[in-house]
Image (cartoon, rainbow, N blue to C red; front, top):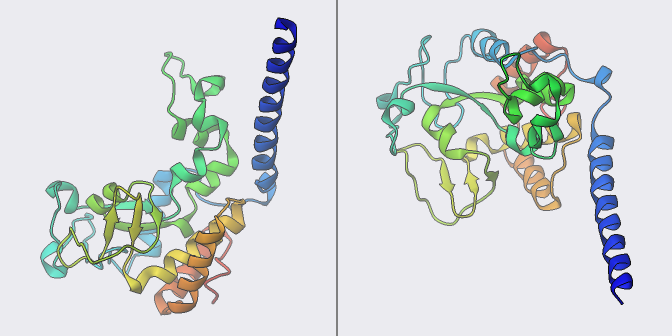
Length: 258
């Protein structure tokens, strides 16, 4: 009897291992061939510099709240009716946001989950890099996606921090926490409702990232983004932004068009 139980346990462990390997294989199969990746900036610092200095050189307006900011990345909160929720210093500065959160496309990658498994992710002094740093160093797909200008937007720092890696969606009611900024977050549901004026921009960014890098979207999310894409078509600046990014990294977002 004991022998039978041991054999059954061994079989279950083998199946579990196969399931994990199959999942990893599917994840790898979804990745583009590295030679076909967009020529995105080599570092996040370069990406931020190009985004603010070239893409937004003559349009210093934050994406989420519509607040103007200056060359020092200081936000004109009074001009847009922005109010800090709890972090006044972060609410006055601009940060660069991943609309498709890096944590969402990093979490399933081994370099993010197990950086200790990569020798390159331990410094000469013995410090182990975190998952994001490790993936930027050893994973060309993650690095390209992480630094892709099509996925990066200037936003108010506090709103960026509060958004975390929550999913996009619709929320009941109009519970605003940032003054006139129409950006609503439900931490319990881990969901964020953006202003109607940028829902199409967000949808086209999410669809682009899924298509370009093989990142998976649920059927529900894909339907939502397709609806937002129809309801909020590209405006003149979104098309100009697309052209500027194409000039910098060699590819356009096909969901935006010229």
